[in-house]
Image (cartoon, rainbow, N blue to C red; front, side):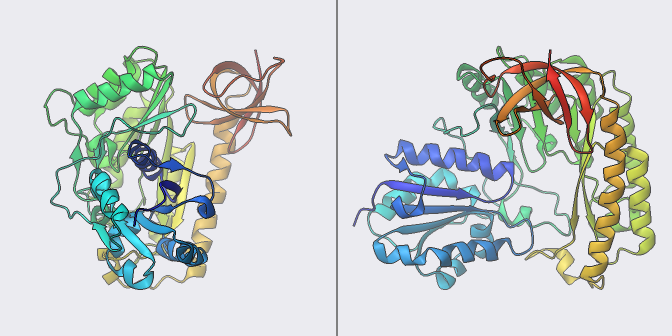
Length: 439
Protein backbone atom coordinates (compact mmCIF):
# COMPACT_ATOMS: atom_id res chain seq x y z
CA UNK A 1 0.00 0.00 0.00
CA UNK A 2 1.53 3.32 -1.04
CA UNK A 3 2.08 5.83 1.72
CA UNK A 4 0.55 9.32 1.55
CA UNK A 5 3.32 11.38 -0.09
CA UNK A 6 3.47 14.07 2.54
CA UNK A 7 6.19 14.23 5.18
CA UNK A 8 7.15 15.88 8.44
CA UNK A 9 10.83 16.06 9.43
CA UNK A 10 12.25 17.06 12.79
CA UNK A 11 16.00 17.58 13.29
CA UNK A 12 17.95 17.05 16.50
CA UNK A 13 21.56 18.13 17.06
CA UNK A 14 24.32 19.92 15.18
CA UNK A 15 24.71 21.97 12.00
CA UNK A 16 25.78 18.81 10.18
CA UNK A 17 22.42 17.26 11.02
CA UNK A 18 20.58 20.44 10.03
CA UNK A 19 22.29 20.43 6.63
CA UNK A 20 21.74 16.67 6.24
CA UNK A 21 18.03 17.42 6.75
CA UNK A 22 18.16 20.04 3.99
CA UNK A 23 19.47 17.35 1.63
CA UNK A 24 16.94 14.78 2.85
CA UNK A 25 14.10 17.27 2.34
CA UNK A 26 15.33 18.05 -1.18
CA UNK A 27 15.55 14.33 -1.98
CA UNK A 28 12.03 13.68 -0.69
CA UNK A 29 10.64 16.59 -2.68
CA UNK A 30 12.39 15.34 -5.81
CA UNK A 31 10.71 11.98 -5.22
CA UNK A 32 7.29 13.67 -5.22
CA UNK A 33 6.80 14.23 -1.50
CA UNK A 34 5.38 17.43 -0.01
CA UNK A 35 6.57 18.79 3.34
CA UNK A 36 3.99 19.67 6.03
CA UNK A 37 4.41 21.42 9.38
CA UNK A 38 2.57 19.00 11.69
CA UNK A 39 3.04 15.29 12.34
CA UNK A 40 -0.73 14.83 12.20
CA UNK A 41 -0.82 16.03 8.59
CA UNK A 42 2.03 13.82 7.33
CA UNK A 43 1.95 10.38 5.78
CA UNK A 44 5.64 9.90 6.63
CA UNK A 45 7.16 11.20 9.89
CA UNK A 46 10.97 11.39 10.01
CA UNK A 47 13.28 12.17 12.94
CA UNK A 48 16.87 13.06 12.07
CA UNK A 49 18.68 12.19 15.28
CA UNK A 50 21.84 13.04 17.22
CA UNK A 51 23.64 10.85 19.77
CA UNK A 52 26.54 13.11 20.74
CA UNK A 53 25.10 13.87 24.19
CA UNK A 54 23.78 11.69 26.99
CA UNK A 55 20.13 10.61 26.77
CA UNK A 56 19.85 11.81 23.14
CA UNK A 57 18.45 8.48 22.04
CA UNK A 58 15.92 8.53 24.89
CA UNK A 59 14.64 11.87 23.63
CA UNK A 60 13.99 10.27 20.23
CA UNK A 61 12.19 7.27 21.69
CA UNK A 62 10.10 9.58 23.85
CA UNK A 63 9.11 11.55 20.76
CA UNK A 64 8.25 8.35 18.93
CA UNK A 65 6.16 7.18 21.87
CA UNK A 66 4.34 10.52 22.00
CA UNK A 67 3.14 10.06 18.43
CA UNK A 68 2.76 6.29 18.11
CA UNK A 69 -1.00 6.71 18.13
CA UNK A 70 -0.61 8.18 14.64
CA UNK A 71 0.61 4.77 13.45
CA UNK A 72 -2.94 3.49 13.85
CA UNK A 73 -4.05 6.29 11.55
CA UNK A 74 -1.79 4.93 8.82
CA UNK A 75 1.26 7.11 9.40
CA UNK A 76 4.73 5.70 8.73
CA UNK A 77 7.79 6.51 10.83
CA UNK A 78 11.49 6.79 9.94
CA UNK A 79 14.48 7.28 12.25
CA UNK A 80 17.53 8.80 10.56
CA UNK A 81 20.99 9.90 11.63
CA UNK A 82 23.29 8.99 14.48
CA UNK A 83 20.82 7.26 16.80
CA UNK A 84 19.65 5.19 13.82
CA UNK A 85 23.22 4.07 13.10
CA UNK A 86 23.99 3.52 16.79
CA UNK A 87 20.86 1.52 17.67
CA UNK A 88 20.31 -0.14 14.28
CA UNK A 89 17.60 -2.76 14.09
CA UNK A 90 17.04 -2.56 17.86
CA UNK A 91 14.85 0.44 17.02
CA UNK A 92 12.35 -1.91 15.41
CA UNK A 93 12.18 -3.88 18.67
CA UNK A 94 11.69 -0.81 20.87
CA UNK A 95 9.36 0.97 18.44
CA UNK A 96 7.69 -1.61 16.15
CA UNK A 97 5.75 1.12 14.35
CA UNK A 98 9.00 2.45 12.82
CA UNK A 99 9.33 1.34 9.19
CA UNK A 100 12.69 2.83 8.13
CA UNK A 101 16.03 3.18 9.95
CA UNK A 102 18.93 4.87 8.17
CA UNK A 103 22.30 6.24 9.25
CA UNK A 104 23.67 9.34 7.56
CA UNK A 105 26.21 7.33 5.54
CA UNK A 106 23.26 5.67 3.72
CA UNK A 107 21.25 8.76 2.74
CA UNK A 108 22.35 8.39 -0.89
CA UNK A 109 20.16 5.24 -0.93
CA UNK A 110 17.10 7.17 0.25
CA UNK A 111 15.24 7.16 -3.11
CA UNK A 112 15.34 3.35 -3.33
CA UNK A 113 14.37 3.02 0.34
CA UNK A 114 11.36 5.25 -0.31
CA UNK A 115 10.28 3.00 -3.18
CA UNK A 116 10.39 0.01 -0.82
CA UNK A 117 8.44 1.96 1.79
CA UNK A 118 5.75 2.85 -0.73
CA UNK A 119 5.56 -0.83 -1.73
CA UNK A 120 4.55 -1.68 1.84
CA UNK A 121 7.80 -2.93 3.40
CA UNK A 122 7.88 -2.31 7.15
CA UNK A 123 11.51 -2.97 8.14
CA UNK A 124 13.85 -1.07 5.84
CA UNK A 125 17.42 -0.35 6.94
CA UNK A 126 20.28 1.74 5.61
CA UNK A 127 23.19 1.06 7.95
CA UNK A 128 26.48 1.37 6.07
CA UNK A 129 29.52 0.50 8.14
CA UNK A 130 32.91 2.25 8.16
CA UNK A 131 33.87 0.66 4.85
CA UNK A 132 31.81 3.05 2.72
CA UNK A 133 33.70 5.53 0.57
CA UNK A 134 30.54 7.32 -0.56
CA UNK A 135 29.43 10.82 0.38
CA UNK A 136 25.88 12.17 0.24
CA UNK A 137 25.81 14.64 -2.64
CA UNK A 138 22.62 15.89 -4.25
CA UNK A 139 21.60 18.79 -6.44
CA UNK A 140 18.18 18.76 -4.81
CA UNK A 141 19.14 20.34 -1.47
CA UNK A 142 16.22 22.29 -0.03
CA UNK A 143 17.98 25.13 1.78
CA UNK A 144 16.05 26.11 4.90
CA UNK A 145 18.35 28.89 6.11
CA UNK A 146 17.44 32.23 4.49
CA UNK A 147 20.90 33.78 4.79
CA UNK A 148 23.56 31.04 4.98
CA UNK A 149 24.28 28.18 2.60
CA UNK A 150 25.89 25.06 4.08
CA UNK A 151 28.23 22.71 2.22
CA UNK A 152 29.48 19.45 3.75
CA UNK A 153 33.01 18.91 2.38
CA UNK A 154 34.03 15.89 4.50
CA UNK A 155 31.94 13.25 6.24
CA UNK A 156 32.85 10.84 9.04
CA UNK A 157 35.75 10.77 11.48
CA UNK A 158 38.97 8.77 11.92
CA UNK A 159 40.12 10.39 15.17
CA UNK A 160 38.49 7.97 17.68
CA UNK A 161 38.64 10.28 20.70
CA UNK A 162 37.89 8.15 23.74
CA UNK A 163 34.62 9.93 24.60
CA UNK A 164 33.14 10.40 21.11
CA UNK A 165 30.55 8.29 19.32
CA UNK A 166 30.89 10.04 15.92
CA UNK A 167 33.39 7.60 14.31
CA UNK A 168 30.91 4.80 15.02
CA UNK A 169 27.79 6.63 13.79
CA UNK A 170 29.08 8.57 10.77
CA UNK A 171 31.72 6.25 9.37
CA UNK A 172 35.26 6.94 8.27
CA UNK A 173 36.57 10.22 6.93
CA UNK A 174 35.71 10.68 3.26
CA UNK A 175 36.06 13.94 1.39
CA UNK A 176 34.24 15.33 -1.61
CA UNK A 177 36.19 16.47 -4.64
CA UNK A 178 37.08 20.15 -4.68
CA UNK A 179 35.41 20.35 -8.09
CA UNK A 180 32.06 19.24 -6.64
CA UNK A 181 32.41 21.57 -3.64
CA UNK A 182 33.10 24.58 -5.85
CA UNK A 183 30.22 23.67 -8.17
CA UNK A 184 27.88 23.64 -5.16
CA UNK A 185 29.34 26.95 -3.94
CA UNK A 186 28.54 28.46 -7.32
CA UNK A 187 24.96 27.09 -7.20
CA UNK A 188 24.56 28.66 -3.75
CA UNK A 189 25.82 32.00 -5.01
CA UNK A 190 23.50 31.77 -8.02
CA UNK A 191 20.58 31.29 -5.60
CA UNK A 192 21.41 34.64 -4.01
CA UNK A 193 23.29 33.51 -0.91
CA UNK A 194 26.28 35.61 0.11
CA UNK A 195 27.50 33.51 3.04
CA UNK A 196 28.73 29.92 2.86
CA UNK A 197 29.66 27.67 5.77
CA UNK A 198 31.81 24.61 5.06
CA UNK A 199 31.02 21.67 7.34
CA UNK A 200 32.70 18.50 8.55
CA UNK A 201 33.14 16.59 11.78
CA UNK A 202 36.79 17.58 11.29
CA UNK A 203 36.47 20.06 8.47
CA UNK A 204 40.19 20.81 8.24
CA UNK A 205 41.00 17.09 7.86
CA UNK A 206 39.76 17.52 4.27
CA UNK A 207 41.75 15.62 1.64
CA UNK A 208 40.81 16.36 -1.97
CA UNK A 209 40.28 13.03 -3.81
CA UNK A 210 41.37 14.84 -6.98
CA UNK A 211 44.59 16.05 -5.33
CA UNK A 212 43.95 19.56 -6.62
CA UNK A 213 43.58 21.59 -3.43
CA UNK A 214 44.54 21.53 0.22
CA UNK A 215 41.93 22.62 2.76
CA UNK A 216 43.42 26.13 2.86
CA UNK A 217 43.40 26.32 -0.95
CA UNK A 218 39.77 25.17 -1.02
CA UNK A 219 38.90 27.90 1.50
CA UNK A 220 40.48 30.49 -0.78
CA UNK A 221 38.71 29.13 -3.88
CA UNK A 222 35.28 29.21 -2.18
CA UNK A 223 36.03 32.72 -0.95
CA UNK A 224 36.68 33.83 -4.52
CA UNK A 225 33.32 32.60 -5.90
CA UNK A 226 31.50 35.61 -7.37
CA UNK A 227 28.84 37.05 -5.08
CA UNK A 228 30.11 35.38 -1.89
CA UNK A 229 30.94 37.86 0.88
CA UNK A 230 31.53 35.54 3.81
CA UNK A 231 32.94 32.02 4.20
CA UNK A 232 32.93 30.17 7.53
CA UNK A 233 34.10 26.66 8.43
CA UNK A 234 33.52 24.32 11.35
CA UNK A 235 34.63 22.21 13.17
CA UNK A 236 38.44 22.13 13.07
CA UNK A 237 40.62 19.55 14.82
CA UNK A 238 43.92 20.74 16.35
CA UNK A 239 45.81 17.74 14.92
CA UNK A 240 45.10 18.89 11.37
CA UNK A 241 45.19 22.65 11.95
CA UNK A 242 48.01 23.96 9.74
CA UNK A 243 49.61 27.38 9.52
CA UNK A 244 48.43 27.95 5.95
CA UNK A 245 44.82 28.12 7.24
CA UNK A 246 45.72 31.26 9.18
CA UNK A 247 47.68 32.64 6.24
CA UNK A 248 44.74 32.23 3.86
CA UNK A 249 42.37 33.96 6.31
CA UNK A 250 44.80 36.87 6.28
CA UNK A 251 44.97 36.87 2.48
CA UNK A 252 41.31 36.40 1.45
CA UNK A 253 38.95 39.11 2.80
CA UNK A 254 35.82 36.99 2.35
CA UNK A 255 37.05 34.37 4.85
CA UNK A 256 35.53 35.20 8.23
CA UNK A 257 37.91 36.11 11.02
CA UNK A 258 36.76 33.35 13.36
CA UNK A 259 38.20 29.92 14.18
CA UNK A 260 36.49 27.27 16.29
CA UNK A 261 39.22 24.97 17.61
CA UNK A 262 38.08 22.50 20.31
CA UNK A 263 40.72 21.90 23.00
CA UNK A 264 38.59 19.73 25.39
CA UNK A 265 41.13 19.95 28.26
CA UNK A 266 44.17 21.93 29.35
CA UNK A 267 45.78 18.88 30.98
CA UNK A 268 48.28 16.82 28.98
CA UNK A 269 47.38 13.76 31.07
CA UNK A 270 43.65 14.11 30.39
CA UNK A 271 44.24 14.81 26.68
CA UNK A 272 46.18 11.53 26.52
CA UNK A 273 43.33 9.68 28.26
CA UNK A 274 40.96 11.28 25.75
CA UNK A 275 43.16 10.04 22.85
CA UNK A 276 43.27 13.55 21.42
CA UNK A 277 46.89 12.94 20.32
CA UNK A 278 48.17 16.45 20.97
CA UNK A 279 49.48 18.31 24.02
CA UNK A 280 48.51 21.70 25.45
CA UNK A 281 51.79 23.02 24.03
CA UNK A 282 50.84 21.79 20.54
CA UNK A 283 47.45 23.47 20.87
CA UNK A 284 48.91 26.73 22.17
CA UNK A 285 51.35 26.87 19.25
CA UNK A 286 48.36 26.95 16.88
CA UNK A 287 46.75 29.62 19.01
CA UNK A 288 49.94 31.67 18.69
CA UNK A 289 49.68 31.47 14.87
CA UNK A 290 46.10 32.73 15.04
CA UNK A 291 46.97 35.57 17.43
CA UNK A 292 49.88 36.64 15.22
CA UNK A 293 47.59 37.12 12.19
CA UNK A 294 47.23 40.60 10.72
CA UNK A 295 43.46 40.37 11.16
CA UNK A 296 42.00 40.04 14.67
CA UNK A 297 40.68 36.45 14.54
CA UNK A 298 38.05 35.49 17.10
CA UNK A 299 38.57 32.17 18.90
CA UNK A 300 36.02 29.71 20.26
CA UNK A 301 36.43 26.21 21.67
CA UNK A 302 34.81 23.17 23.30
CA UNK A 303 35.80 21.96 26.78
CA UNK A 304 34.73 18.79 28.63
CA UNK A 305 34.95 18.78 32.43
CA UNK A 306 34.80 15.71 34.63
CA UNK A 307 36.33 13.27 32.16
CA UNK A 308 37.11 9.95 33.95
CA UNK A 309 40.25 10.45 36.00
CA UNK A 310 40.29 14.26 35.81
CA UNK A 311 41.83 15.43 39.10
CA UNK A 312 41.40 18.87 40.68
CA UNK A 313 44.88 19.70 39.41
CA UNK A 314 43.93 18.67 35.85
CA UNK A 315 40.94 21.00 36.08
CA UNK A 316 43.19 23.84 37.29
CA UNK A 317 45.36 23.31 34.19
CA UNK A 318 42.24 23.72 32.03
CA UNK A 319 41.42 26.94 33.86
CA UNK A 320 45.01 28.13 33.29
CA UNK A 321 44.68 27.49 29.54
CA UNK A 322 41.36 29.35 29.56
CA UNK A 323 43.07 32.39 31.07
CA UNK A 324 46.02 32.17 28.70
CA UNK A 325 44.03 31.96 25.46
CA UNK A 326 41.14 34.31 26.39
CA UNK A 327 38.56 32.70 24.09
CA UNK A 328 35.63 34.75 22.79
CA UNK A 329 33.30 31.80 23.33
CA UNK A 330 33.49 28.45 25.13
CA UNK A 331 31.02 25.58 24.79
CA UNK A 332 31.44 23.73 28.07
CA UNK A 333 30.06 20.26 28.79
CA UNK A 334 30.04 17.72 31.59
CA UNK A 335 31.40 14.34 30.53
CA UNK A 336 28.75 11.73 29.85
CA UNK A 337 29.44 8.22 28.62
CA UNK A 338 28.41 7.32 25.09
CA UNK A 339 27.78 3.83 23.66
CA UNK A 340 30.70 1.93 22.12
CA UNK A 341 33.32 4.48 23.22
CA UNK A 342 36.58 3.49 25.00
CA UNK A 343 35.89 5.94 27.85
CA UNK A 344 33.04 3.68 29.00
CA UNK A 345 35.67 1.22 30.27
CA UNK A 346 37.33 3.90 32.42
CA UNK A 347 36.35 4.40 36.04
CA UNK A 348 34.08 7.46 36.18
CA UNK A 349 34.49 8.29 39.87
CA UNK A 350 33.67 12.00 39.62
CA UNK A 351 30.22 12.73 41.00
CA UNK A 352 27.62 14.61 38.98
CA UNK A 353 27.69 17.30 41.66
CA UNK A 354 31.45 17.76 41.23
CA UNK A 355 31.13 17.82 37.43
CA UNK A 356 28.45 20.48 37.73
CA UNK A 357 30.56 22.51 40.15
CA UNK A 358 33.60 22.43 37.84
CA UNK A 359 31.49 23.37 34.85
CA UNK A 360 30.02 26.34 36.71
CA UNK A 361 33.47 27.56 37.75
CA UNK A 362 34.64 27.33 34.13
CA UNK A 363 31.58 29.12 32.74
CA UNK A 364 31.74 31.89 35.38
CA UNK A 365 35.40 32.57 34.56
CA UNK A 366 34.71 32.45 30.82
CA UNK A 367 31.85 34.92 31.22
CA UNK A 368 34.26 37.40 32.81
CA UNK A 369 36.80 36.86 29.98
CA UNK A 370 34.06 37.46 27.39
CA UNK A 371 32.86 40.59 29.21
CA UNK A 372 36.37 42.05 28.85
CA UNK A 373 36.80 40.84 25.25
CA UNK A 374 33.45 42.16 24.07
CA UNK A 375 33.96 45.54 25.79
CA UNK A 376 36.90 46.19 23.45
CA UNK A 377 34.42 46.62 20.58
CA UNK A 378 32.72 49.65 22.17
CA UNK A 379 32.69 52.54 19.68
CA UNK A 380 33.78 50.40 16.72
CA UNK A 381 31.86 50.30 13.43
CA UNK A 382 31.51 46.78 12.06
CA UNK A 383 29.75 45.04 9.20
CA UNK A 384 26.83 42.95 10.42
CA UNK A 385 24.84 40.41 8.46
CA UNK A 386 21.12 40.57 9.30
CA UNK A 387 19.71 37.24 10.52
CA UNK A 388 16.30 38.14 12.01
CA UNK A 389 14.13 40.86 13.54
CA UNK A 390 12.94 41.34 17.13
CA UNK A 391 9.89 43.63 16.75
CA UNK A 392 9.12 43.49 20.49
CA UNK A 393 12.44 45.20 21.24
CA UNK A 394 12.66 47.17 18.03
CA UNK A 395 15.95 45.50 17.17
CA UNK A 396 17.59 43.81 14.22
CA UNK A 397 19.47 40.59 15.07
CA UNK A 398 22.70 39.98 13.22
CA UNK A 399 26.21 38.57 13.38
CA UNK A 400 29.67 40.00 12.79
CA UNK A 401 32.40 38.38 10.73
CA UNK A 402 33.91 37.26 14.08
CA UNK A 403 30.68 35.29 14.72
CA UNK A 404 29.59 37.61 17.53
CA UNK A 405 25.84 38.32 17.89
CA UNK A 406 24.95 41.97 17.32
CA UNK A 407 21.52 43.41 18.20
CA UNK A 408 21.02 46.87 16.75
CA UNK A 409 18.46 49.53 15.93
CA UNK A 410 17.88 50.78 12.42
CA UNK A 411 16.33 54.04 11.30
CA UNK A 412 14.93 52.60 8.08
CA UNK A 413 11.14 52.54 7.68
CA UNK A 414 11.38 48.99 6.30
CA UNK A 415 13.56 46.57 8.26
CA UNK A 416 16.49 45.12 6.27
CA UNK A 417 15.96 41.59 5.00
CA UNK A 418 17.82 38.56 6.39
CA UNK A 419 21.06 38.16 4.48
CA UNK A 420 21.60 41.88 3.96
CA UNK A 421 24.56 43.73 5.43
CA UNK A 422 24.62 46.82 7.62
CA UNK A 423 27.32 49.02 9.08
CA UNK A 424 26.70 49.16 12.82
CA UNK A 425 28.31 51.33 15.49
CA UNK A 426 28.69 49.41 18.74
CA UNK A 427 27.15 51.35 21.63
CA UNK A 428 26.85 48.62 24.26
CA UNK A 429 28.57 45.35 25.15
CA UNK A 430 27.57 42.24 27.09
CA UNK A 431 29.38 38.94 27.78
CA UNK A 432 27.57 37.16 24.94
CA UNK A 433 26.50 39.92 22.52
CA UNK A 434 26.96 43.44 21.27
CA UNK A 435 24.38 46.21 20.82
CA UNK A 436 24.50 49.15 18.48
CA UNK A 437 22.86 51.36 15.90
CA UNK A 438 23.11 51.34 12.13
CA UNK A 439 25.16 54.08 10.52
